[in-house]
Amino acid sequence: MFPTSTDKQIETAYSHAKARYAAYGVDAETAMQRLAGIPISLHCWQGDDVGGFESLAAMDGGGIQATGNYPGKARSADELRADADKAFSLIPGRHRFNIHAMYAETGGKKVDRDALEPAHFAGWIDWARARGLGMDFNPTCFAHPMADSGMTLAHADPAVRRFWIDHCVACRRIGAAMGRALGTPTVTNIWIPDGMKDIPVDRMAPRARLRDALDAVLAEPIDPSHNLDAVESKLFGIGSESYVVGSHEFYLGYAVHKGVLLTLDAGHFHPTESIADKISSTLLYVKELLLHVSRGVRWDSDHVVILSDELRAIAEEIIRHNATDRVHIGLDFFDASINRIAAWVTGTRAMIKALLIALLEPAETLRALEQDGDFTARLALLEEIKTLPFGAVWDYYCLKQGVPAGAAWINEVKQYEKDVLSKRN
Image (tube, rainbow, N blue to C red; front, top):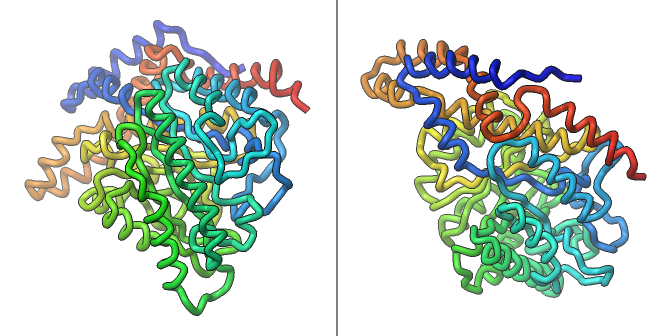
């Protein structure tokens, strides 16, 4: 059993921490209030290893693969929702849930992706409404016979291209239905695996086809209070090592040109390249961003998020520039080698911790030092605040949000594994 702290212990530690932060001009209460208003979008595919619920034969995942065979993965939408409920019960704050089109519930009938409708996601919408959650959505442009060539919206065959255009059009309508029903706009994010394993001769033609296909996808006006469109780049993928049609430069230009959201995925760039530095640059030219927060390990982009320097830098950029209303924070990782609910909780709590640390930063003092050219004091203060007792504020925030503080949540996951997950074949 992992240790638990009494309410009194947590409150006493918080009282001391609050005073420490106040000495630096930081109000811990205000920081927690702001934190409670920042939603994180949890991704459904961590719960079932990116499997979905289609009745299609096993196919190439289009560069997406979950590794491991930890027992107890969700086998149905009901099981996946139950697992997500457990995860949400261990995460402080009110958040969102992000699903892919291949998680449709079609009542056992075969419905191809270009024919999906909002009715196929009614179960998800009802579940989210009952819990006060927002939802986000994604076309699934992989793991399908029409994606076997490695090309979808950029395919040279007009018929294949049309299929994927129709799928993405359907997904925008589904996203709008979700947003309308839940009273908060759905972010519908388009990512495609299109690329080539070896060196192409013509790099421009597929990109011109992708541009035109995206124009067709986005042609129908949709109320932004119901649906927001986003486009996501990637540096490389399995089977697209030498060339990706939807590069960062392509989508940055497209997002600026069309006024859609740009998606920055922390695992979709070079291993030493941080998306944190891209936030302030891109926000000068795009109205809003979508983040897919992941953890790249060498060339594997989708490890469970931890409280790393990179994660802290991402949170700092959002908070320092007061961009919480312009940056949508989503998670994107999938690990089948560990308990899947623990992966959700670990990653989400890490993201929220990073935001709390940023909110507890004496940003105005640091900014004034920088503007005055006192770089000595800026560096020294940045180092000193690293040891301030944010953990005591975090535990108090969890207590006030009604979720376990510290490592106590691990006990609940282990009990859920014993009671529920272990009984799944």
